Length: 135
Ligand SMILES: [Zn+2]
Ligand SMILES: [Zn+2]
Image 1 (cartoon, helix red, strand yellow):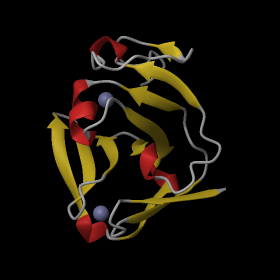
Image 2: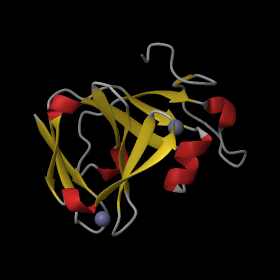
Image 3: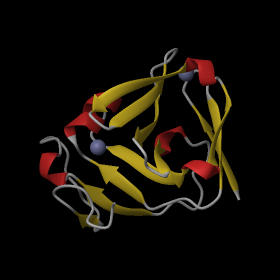
Image 4: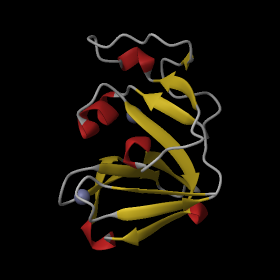
């Protein structure tokens, strides 16, 4: 199964070839600020299964914490994915996927720092910080 995605302006296009991880909604302050939204929808994908097809030259990284880089398009500002140094996966911003089929949301993380104006109304698991199973 392949999934395709890209940024708002279309300069960056990527593909995912392989299993998608469990989608989490992240309410941490960094994700909120980086994306300008109430929460980010983050999807782990093995690096081996993630490929930039076009526009690598438009991809810039911002070091948001000592080991974490958030990659975005320099033309349109779309957040594309984040990467923790030495990790074996990237965390795709699921809103950049064209279709997003077969994605199953599993939890809200960092619910302890969620925006006061946002109410979580589903029955997914909630963790005040990161999910316990995450390495
Ligand atoms: Zn773009
Ligand atoms: Zn976050």
